[in-house]
Length: 331
View 1 (cartoon, rainbow, N blue to C red):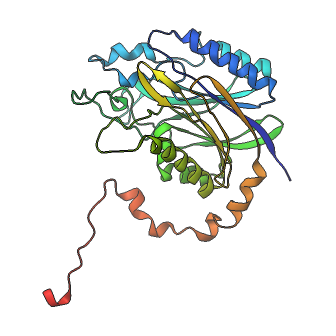
View 2: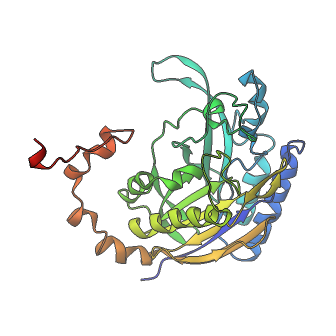
View 3: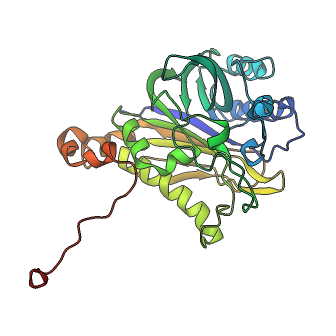
């Protein structure tokens, strides 16, 4: 039996340092209105959708970066998005930088900073929150780099795991939904944790540069998009789910983001793709019944998984050398 939800990836063009949140929110409101006209029931915005990708800019005093963060959601600036959700009857996903006053692992109450995303219901209520786990980049200024990537400076590793929630969306009484942020998509462990919770729809926002700014070796320009899509398509196929992967795109603060937002089905097929480097809305009708095939055959986890053989995945972080084989004659 078909279970169809109409989803939209609301790609954003660049947001420059000097632009206030009101500019980004107004652009997102126009995309939500367009989504409503097209019959979308869920809109997915990018990672850090309210500001420029500020981790490319160094602040010696981390507190100087607090202006890029939100201390409440909704805030005065983002409240119009929640109003639009209620007005149009549309759910939405929003990525942003979050400041939270909460205890750390030692129990000490302090100011904590996360790269965060929330899922908001058509009634304007926050249904699910996720904090980015796989933080790329570095924590200190590196003078040899042309562009800094300071996510490890400005954010802590997410402490909410990879949650999935079942909630009504559109005309469906319940959809299993989870979230990732940017670099998470490259880690199959993240997809599998969601898959083990029977996720049907993964929402993913990203800001990814068109070149490998680490400069650790040659990576062809076109492979940046290929590797991004490959990770998402493989994650959907291997976990029998849909994904809405939404980018920021274009030249932001003088640096190029590659865009190429996509919607992917459980067979790993791209069913919609952005073709510009600007604000662009792409939509797809997703029949969640398509998740059943993979989940009950090739990827019937309860029948075929062998966790006892996967212990290295959770017990080991860095790669280690294997034992070295030596011919018996040499002994």
